[in-house]
Length: 353
Image (cartoon, rainbow, N blue to C red):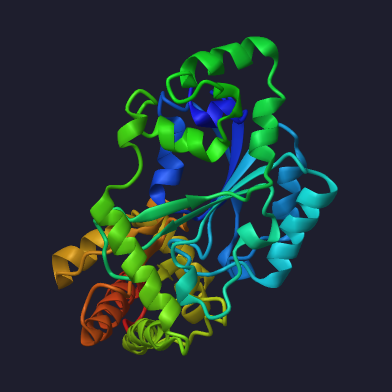
């Protein structure tokens, strides 16, 4: 019995995923260790990747026990705007005070003035953050999980029926003479090492030292020069891509410029027309996009469908390559799109442009 179960999230329960979302959040609920049912609350590109009233309405169902989000999104790279946040806050405060919210805020530092749901819904929210992106230490596994002192998780644990309390007492008795008093956050740490190895749970001392140093550097940088530099680098690369693609874009103030979704269907519809879109969807497989980019241009992008993003899309990361590489990616993407249009024109006997 895990800490998640001790907070009333059990096998067979239903959770909502704010999609598109980082692939493991789609895959983990299906594992036999969790066996959770899922529904998708989709933030569509047409809505600038924000949740509408209709999207949030799905969370009114009491059978939906939790909402898992990546904010700003991966791969959408868009943070929740004040309207989306207010919709969710109103839902929880007025209709679903029992809803568990997990927010993965790893990209929050790339959006000036970012606001986490942990600040708006502290009682209901589990906050997740990783140092890997902002401080460029991917692979070091430096991350934190946070809950407020006053939270619904400890309340849910205390509200268990006596038979469940006894089972949990047996699980955590190696930790303390009073296992029923163990906080939810401490159970998470213990369960990360199957409780029996609780004395070695959590991050190692060198990892904790690095996190402390990173945090101190950020706290001392009162003018946020490092943050501004990181944002400037990613923003420049984004516009290099847009220029290479030869399109117009207005990503808005909540875009973090860390990732980007190139939605071929969206752009073909905007610049060429519905007839081309329909023909391409009938005659070409969506995975042709990443394969063609790899085979013809030596460019590797992940397909958007793996994130429950639009099928005819690919994800670009602006954190990995030199600035000029993104101009090349943009030109390659435009070449692939032009190839689809020319194939359509040839099939229809039209003059190839």
